[in-house]
Length: 178
Image (cartoon, rainbow, N blue to C red):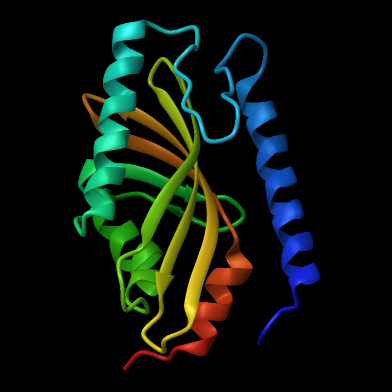
């Protein structure tokens, strides 16, 4: 099903408003500071060294993904990954098999992840990014994401993932796997 640009624009506005509202609720008073669009901020109230290490680990994971590697190497084996308005996965293996595979198995190219904004506060890194790839049927796949990662020892132990589930549903419904 193809959507006209007005419908896509409205969906994008609703997604952005929902994510912004969720971030405001999660941030509360005195939490992470937001950077202007396209910039990265690390001016939260936590320890600067910890925030710097976490931000660097996240940026390495995104660079690895965009170079054809696997962003999910940063996940702890016992990660709790919650897709907001979806479900919670209680291990890396479960998330990879049931959460990310339905998307990634339908892509014919790597999912290029473009970070738009990033915030840090103590052990938490919030990443707003766009993901783009070509599906195995040749149609472009685009999604907007916001992941809230809690890190411990350079690994993600908790995630709240906001994403456009309509785009995911369209991809999954359009491409049947054997």
